[in-house]
Length: 613
Image (cartoon, rainbow, N blue to C red; front, top):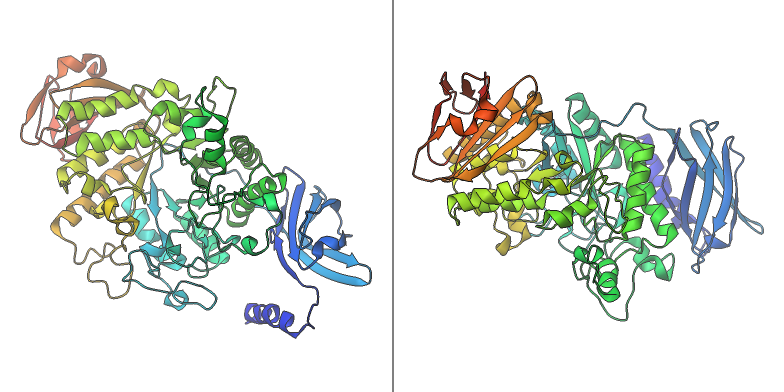
């Protein structure tokens, strides 16, 4: 009731003020934290002619250093110093202009203690889209002030999934064997249509109320931690939504990249690497808009840079977050992104960030990798990158359109280029995501191909990511539109005839895929040799790919036979350097055991994961 009254007072008081009265409408960040390594804090204050005011505070340990004004008098940027002596409490900020006086009570909180949990190869990240996963609270389906309302029949519309629905499914996810959850963006996206995907932010500091509240997101992180799971938050620094409140009154003309007419990016991050690239092509890559509804932010503006960096620091400290996935990583100004990644790492050592770098060539992906010494001197400080080359190689290996050996050679060849990455085991690997045809559809709805692909992605090097619904071989064709890649998770809505959670109504292939996925993921959870072991692979022959994960204590042999109709016998002598000292093994998938490694028979379209003894 107290929170409700506070909300009502906040809403009603401006309406009772006389016309033209001064009101502070926004202060970002909405709060800050003691105990930060960097004592600097920049507040963006927005209100009519607030830029004409001065500011003072007498809070112990807090000092106002400078005030920055832009050509728009409705903004004032307040640079403060929060010293080690500052204690959590309420900082009274007094704004004065002649006889006018405004007071804003600014919360100063205590940051979470303890090191960042981070992510590594022991994890499996589960990617889900909040609007499409589960509806745990139907009271927020339709809300006043939100432009787009519920329309579950529209593939591109709002379907009602929310943060509460995800919380309700945490036990299922824990049982499935995943150790981390990556949420597509849940921040406010108050756009006219297709706002469900979340990539058109309209408020950086507010959860979309159709998903829930900031506190509910913090509850989600806390509940995940109780189960030994971690949470990744999706962020976008490249652009905002066209309905962001800034767009009605920009802080400055150069807050976004502006042209005489709509100008789209050329989507060519290769221009940053290309020694022959024209300045125009580089400019279009960085400054062109991603889409007509996505105004492109100008990260070269120091005020924009600080604002964006603080948003990530705030969410990490506020929610005790474990990781960030940065959308369209190469599109913003590269030096600014490097400073951001470095600042996050300095403030929260060990914190996990993965940047979306969508290219099919490891030489282009590796440019952004951690500790890569590029010829132009650029360093990204980015802890991890999305490994699209491995993803596309897996598609070619298991989609059945190529000669089996040629297909598996795509995987071999991609991994053979790992010398381009200083730390390839940090790469996030996956079979599909929210922007591409689902793996089951990619394989021609071949369950055996899915099993081989999953066996590969869960045993090769890197940090695996699983897209929601993949565990029951959900279908989705990119050519039909993105909405068809992001269908509702069965059982997430009351009245669903099929439920993954309870297992009711599942078809035979869905149940088989779910059992298979759960089995491998839970086996993987405790296998240190898969998490940190070395990798050795052999050139594919006759449609068979063999590789080993090994350390000083144990070894796992993986055999993939992609021939659809032919069983094959593998001769142990061809892999003697990896089998030396071992006398037998057990396939963790089928339970098959052998005491003779001289020859191993493998059925068609099958993967074997053999624990050697």
